[in-house]
Length: 196
Image (cartoon, rainbow, N blue to C red; front, side, top):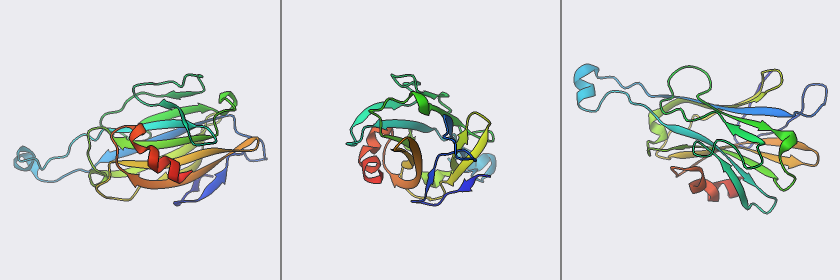
């Protein structure tokens, strides 16, 4: 059964029975707000529109130095441990709109933190987004482990969703939900560093 996370909450990434997870995926989903106004309203800018949110994963060392970024322009980490599903420019449809696959067994020892972010590439604010969420899934059996709803509205264009950090030989996930500004993941580095 999935844990519904609130800001700042941490969970240890272990399977039921105590074994360590090996492969997980972080799913991001959202919908554009459906604006009312009919044909006349849409001609005057009142209709709904596509929202291009982008999920990214920043890989950092123990000193919080950026080592690599997986995003829609680089769909795989240099060490091949993390893969991005590709860019979704609309948010249409149900379920995960973008997915980042993580093989925890292949992440180099130099990587201490994985920061998952979402940003609005076209600069649309989270006032224009609804039903945004991120969820962590055990990729070996498709079980949802945790879900974090990104419900904060505002004029921000980015959110630091979650941080997965090494804890000895296992990993812990922290729900963050910090609003920030940025059109690409690198823009959010100050908020990522503050969240670790």
